Length: 283
Ligand SMILES: [Zn+2]
Figure 1 (tube, rainbow, N blue to C red):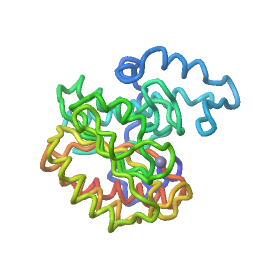
Figure 2 (cartoon, rainbow, N blue to C red):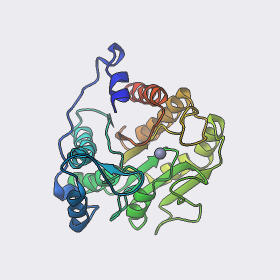
Figure 3 (cartoon, rainbow, N blue to C red):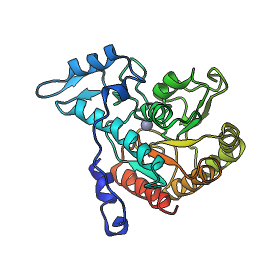
Figure 4 (cartoon, protein in one colour):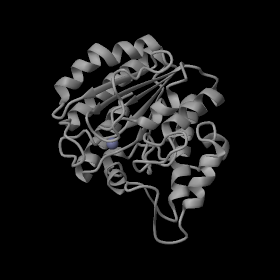
């Protein structure tokens, strides 16, 4: 988080309109996660030190508030976009969200920020059709788990396979062909990304005609990231962001809300997030 904030705090980004993320309400969270799950997460928060939900997913005394604010950031960004205060927004948040299933925290994730945002947009802003593009190197099993049976939400994921969490196969389609999984092998680079964009991602997005485009923006597909073997570079994130903005310009009045997911090599994470935000600012 600090690496991303430092990168976005330089003079180049002086024009950014920063907003403090408010906590999401329980009503917002519970459109996606049942109250018994929210209570369970809250009950596991340690008074001091740390507690582990699983080998990856640690809790500190501040984790519950951080998780509420991460989801709140996405909802607030969506409100700002629909109010016309900005065309797009990037949510620099921790914990990430895309591994959090309806009733299961895992992979550093407690609440599924992007799915909570999609539900909020549909409830609060009266839209139906949302597209979520997840370019984190890992499959967003949680987002798929929550969205697979919601025909109006298209979930598209590029991810390395085989790799954690082991989901995201091509034959997982959702109830209405609304899940598009594109598993790719180690060594996948920007050239391959361009080809799957043209052949699969762009056609699926245009066919869905989203009224809002949400991004699960993980930067662990960068070539320097230690958790995976994709070979993306900063320029690939610039290119991808421009394509996504192009879809948003055509389908949904430029409305894009992007939420930080993974990224584990700090200088690559900072440079990639900066490249992404620099490109979002072009609109
Ligand atoms: Zn990841």
